[in-house]
Length: 359
Ligand code: SF4
Image 1 (tube, rainbow, N blue to C red):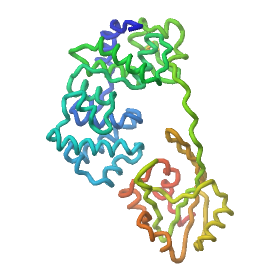
Image 2 (image 1 turned 30 degrees about the vertical axis):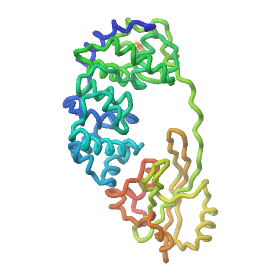
Image 3 (image 1 turned 60 degrees about the vertical axis):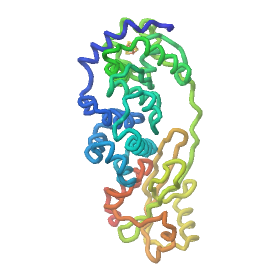
Image 4 (image 1 turned 90 degrees about the vertical axis):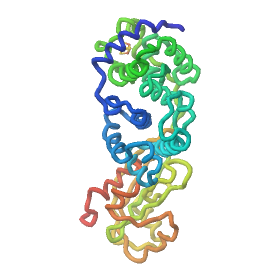
C-alpha cells in the first residue's frame, strides 16, 4: 500500500454519522432497494434519482413484481434515466433471482456478481450496505477521493489501479460497519470532494490527512487518461402529424437505444428546401412544415446533432405504417405508454406541451 489509509477510517465514519443525506434506500436498506438505487445511480445524480426511485418502488415493490413486469411498463418507469440496458438487466437478474434464489437476493458477493448488470462496484455496494459483508465498492467517486487523499498520480481509468485500490480498501475496511464506510467514501465524493477541481476542502473531515491538499495538487488530481473523441452524427428528426396523431418508430432490437421508440429521422441535417424535396420524392402531401429548432444529445461514444421539423400531413399515410415497427400514436399514448428516450426530448416536448394546430 503506497499510502496508509488506516487513519482516515474513524474520521470518515464520524463525518458520515452526522452528514449522510437522508435517502429512502438508506433509511430502509432492504437488499432490493439498495440494488435498484445503485443501478439508477450508475449514471445519474442522487437528487435526480430520488423521484424515479419512489415511482419505481411503488409500481414494482419487490423482486417478483419486477421479474413479471411488462417490458413497456418497465421502460416507461425508466424513461428519462437513459441507458436502458440497465433496467433490462435489472429485470433479467430479478427473473434469475426468482428461479435460483427463491426471490431473495443472495447475501454473497460472488453470487451477486454473477447476476446480469451487477459488476464489482454494485455487488460490493449491495453486499456491504444491505448485508454488512466487508467488501469494497469502488466507483469514480471513491477513486477520486482516495487518490486525492494519497496524492497519487495513478491513472484512474486503468483497471489495475482500481483493483489495487480495492485491495487497499479491503485491508482497512471496518468489519463492524462496512456498509457505512463504503457509503462515507461515496458520500464524501458526491458532496465534498467534488469532481472537476472543485472540492470543498474546508468542509472535509480528512483534510489534515490529504496529500493533494497539502501538496497543492487538488486541481491536478485525479489523473484520467484522455478519452477517445466521440463520433459526431447529424440527423433530421421528423414530427409527422396527422389529425393529432404522430408517427413513432421502434428502433432495432440491438445497438444504441435498442428496442425503444423514436421519432422518425433522416441522416444529415436537412434545410427546409431539402426536406420539402425529400417529402416530394416520397409523394407525401402536407399542409405546412415548421421548424422545431436544433438540439444536441451526448451518448458515451457518439454525439447526435439534430434539427427537427413538424410536418402537418394530409392525405393517405398508409405508406408509413406498412411495417409494424411504425405506429400512429396520440399525445396520451406518447406520454403514458411508449418510452421515447431523452435524446428526443427537445422534439417530443413539442407533442406534450404545445398545441401544434396553433402554430
Ligand atoms: Fe478531497 Fe479536499 Fe478532502 Fe482532500 S481535503 S479529500 S481534496 S475534499
